Length: 125
Image 1 (cartoon, rainbow, N blue to C red):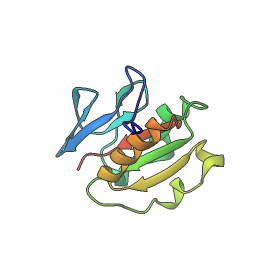
Image 2 (cartoon, rainbow, N blue to C red; image 1 turned 60 degrees about the horizontal axis):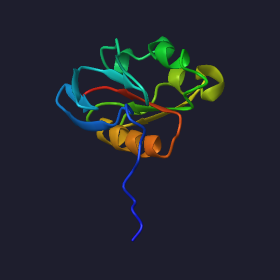
Image 3 (spheres, rainbow, N blue to C red; image 1 turned 120 degrees about the horizontal axis):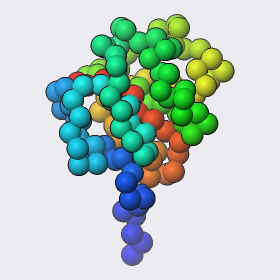
């Protein structure tokens, strides 16, 4: 048989679970919004989806070129990006894909196991 268990480097920040107001990532529980990179987790200083601006993603832009795709977990339901965030890769420097937070967590883990240059910007459910 072929083993298909995902393999990741030691220290890779896989998202283990999420719940009301928090996330479990690589054995540590984080409260509130977070930015999850392959090698680190940062508190994300935003108050909610409606407050997001291009400046909200400054920590991600600082990580370019190591980040190509940002998965925006919008909370308990998917929301459409406002016009000022739909500018695409030319304006932001990365592809921004919005989805509900659970989908963003799962997609982040899959892309990470495929060695993609991804970040999850997560608003809690």
